[in-house]
Length: 253
Ligand SMILES: Cc1cc2nc3c(=O)[nH]c(=O)nc-3n(C[C@H](O)[C@H](O)[C@H](O)COP(=O)(O)OP(=O)(O)OC[C@H]3O[C@@H](n4cnc5c(N)ncnc54)[C@H](O)[C@@H]3O)c2cc1C
Image (cartoon, rainbow, N blue to C red; front, side):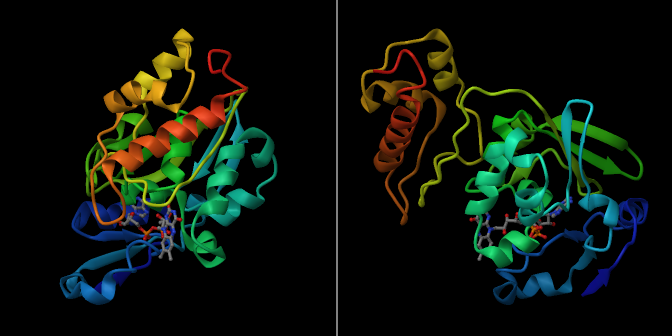
């Protein structure tokens, strides 16, 4: 095993250009959790990003929030103006693990880990976040988060690219709610729900959770597994949507 400790983004990108199989490490809270059982991973090259100060920046400018890839949940919970401008980021950060994970886990790591059960990714997607990638040879590339994932644990990030930042437009929202339910794997990637979005935009009458089930069936394909059943997952989503939106969406009664 080898571990490199670059002090700047260009240094880290140079390492990845030379050894694209090397694995970036941010907080290590996803990467290292299964490590003891994955002996093959011991032989890999790792690039520890934690010494790169520029990746930790959080800035509000030109009508957007620029979140450095190494910003942690704790950083977001305690950054000024976050609660007013991006309350869902704060709400999701509070729900991630316990304080130790909140202090180490990063937003870039949550995106690049590509788990369908990630808590940071759905709120970033709801805010129309854009993933900023960089590589030594290809320069900078920006990919809207809702086009970033191509399948389970698959994404539009080349091995020589780093997630360097996340851009989030600052807009007013009338309603913003984050809800987390355990056993909630409903799709292989985090994704938007266009059929439900259309139903809300069209003002379709909704008289109870069951009225949402057809749109839910078009948007997600839950699985039965040891944590829960597909039927439960669809029903819990219908109930969350219905009871969160009743009272704010005029067509919900
Ligand atoms: C006890 C525990 C509880 C947890 N609870 C939650 C929870 O409630 N909700 C939740 O969403 N997650 C949870 N997690 C998962 C994890 O903490 C988060 O996904 C976290 O955001 C990962 O960030 P990290 O910096 O630790 O990533 P790392 O583990 O360092 O990396 C994760 C993956 O992303 C890649 N990567 C990291 N940074 C970059 C980058 N800048 N560019 C390119 N690739 C990169 C790594 O190579 C690796 O593949 C939990 C983990 C543990 C151990």
